[in-house]
Structures are given as structure tokens and as C-alpha cells.
Length: 98
Image 1 (cartoon, rainbow, N blue to C red):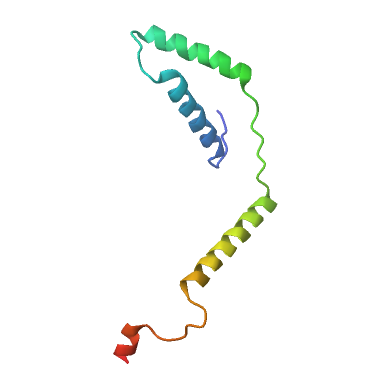
Image 2 (tube, rainbow, N blue to C red; image 1 turned 90 degrees about the horizontal axis):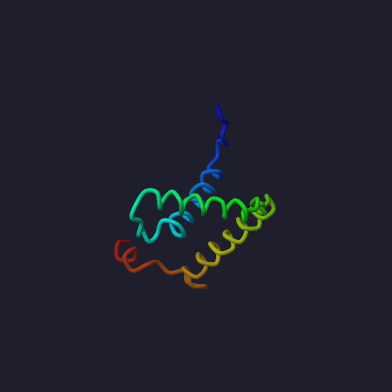
């Protein structure tokens, strides 16, 4: 039995790997036999394993707090741009209804 993480980060790494295989090994698909596909995949796997390095996550909780603060500042700026300064009149539709 293999225990995998309950979050998706390991799946992202698998998707990245298969995306690389698709782009660098299987496209264009000019194979004339399954043996050619197998040979190309095996050669890629050997090269990839020689060059591969562990991925080091650098996104820390402090980075998350900084990102959230920047998003909040951006959203506040957008809200301020949508409401002109010193504009306290009602929209025409509300004025007609009153």
C-alpha cells in the first residue's frame, strides 16, 4: 500500500511531468511502431532522471500574507476607482423612482 498526500501538490508535479513528456517525447507523433514509442520514452526517462533535481517550495506563510495584503490593496484601489471622489448624488434611476 502506498500512502499519498491528501493535498494536490503531488498531483501537480505528476501533471507537469506528463506535460513535459507530451511536448518533448510524444509530439509530433511520427512513430511507425510501438517499439519506437517505447524506445523514445525509455531514453527520455533516463535523461530526465539524470538531470532532475528536487523541487524546493519557497512559498512561505509570510509570502501568503504578503500576497493577500497586495490583493486587498488592489481590490480597494479598484473599488475607489469605481466611485468618483466627492460624488454623493443618487443614480438617475433612483432619483426618478423617488
